[in-house]
Image (cartoon, rainbow, N blue to C red):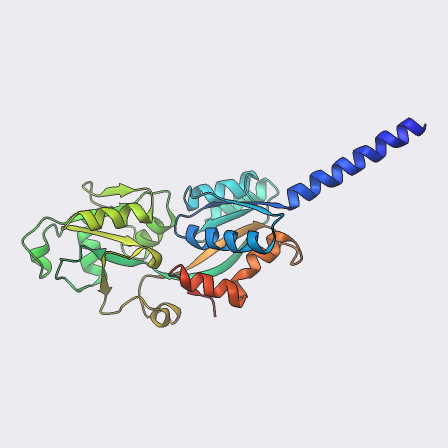
Length: 271
């Protein structure tokens, strides 16, 4: 009997250790747009809590949704809201996909710094991306082919563009697709005729074109006068306990330090 009690006690202790280890590890996956916030928060949080290990993946919003549904991450980073079919898939697996708006972004239209074009309308952008306008001279720019750059179709950034700019119209077959905001930015830097769209945190070295005469700024994004403004999300399985590491991590969006980090990464804190 004594041996049995000792074994049972050992198993209980092992279970508690395992639970503690699980609690001290946070896995995030999803959007490359939300990635800079997630990584900066992770660095900050681990410094404040040395026993906690946080990993951040950037496989795209669609994969972030799959990860939270399949239980392979604790937090899904997404630059778009979950779709109805994703919510249904989560519910079918017993996952309560809970939405947290952690920041705001102005999806920025970017061109090469040498491009003289300063402003484009939503209609002009749609025609460019449909392939109906293929030369910069038709937009007041140089006689040069427009190189159309898009995010990949698994990206929440792509879906924001598809909804707010394309109005679900088919994109030109000549469009080049990239797997991250950083890849779009670099292609624009290297290509004088290129046009692309990226999150606000990825505009260094490129020229931002105003849309409908409006620049993406904290004011125009928050008051939604900028036409391609969007919230940025993190999803959890249920509302996390505010005292847990996941709850404290998510809660950074409303803290002074968390908001400062959001601004430093180039995004806009939630008011």
